[in-house]
Image (tube, rainbow, N blue to C red):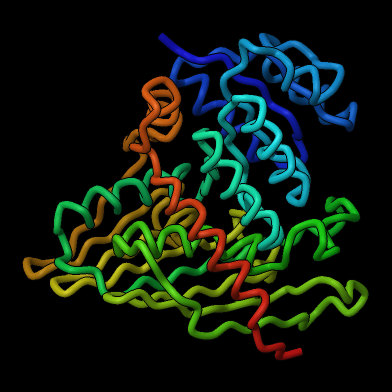
Length: 334
């Protein structure tokens, strides 16, 4: 038994990973829709089994569709998800799933009212094999009680290929909301925190004065009742790096630590998905290339069984809330 799904909003290529995880779980792609013909054509070339819809409404009105997925312009994601839930469908958004606290509040209200699933694809964990392996180790007690996470999310800006909306805060909610949502979700997951507060946050536009509504640097600190977290995100990865960014996560426990080198091991081992475990017995390198990605499979089962095994709904909303709050309280450096 499987599900039927549709893709609406194709502005970020994360839609490909989202689609692939669902197809790998046996889900059936029925429709796709994008307001931009070139994006629809690219998606159709990769997934010819899907049919082009004439509008988002055609998808929402199809009673056979159980799940709508979207990597549209970030500010459009929550309104679509709210409509999908109101039409009796579950929803999967690329991160960020929201761009304002008002959007988040409305999604929480409609989700509670309808009982539908609002899932956000935090791909730096759910789409990264080393991050998945780290979760397995942490929750098996490999490093004892987790005390802190330090997440680094540097990115290449690829400025010539970016659409105009990329540089306007109202469309993406700010750099912490856009990028640090990954690190905040991982903080909650690896520390098993169900509540947390923003301790401090900073924002800056160091290098792009021609885009005054854009920040190229942000960092933030959070804490729960038993752990702390820090993250830094930026748009300063040089073109010479053989990846979009040297994404790293360090997880500190009472009996050891784990370092995840997600995308690249600089001047070291080839490829991505590198994990280093240091415990009381020694230091161990783990190649995670063969670790399965389970997000699509567990989400399909949650849709069929009305469960929350992939990610508690409260966890999804809290990770999004923390970065939106950080954007509001952040101290501006420049």
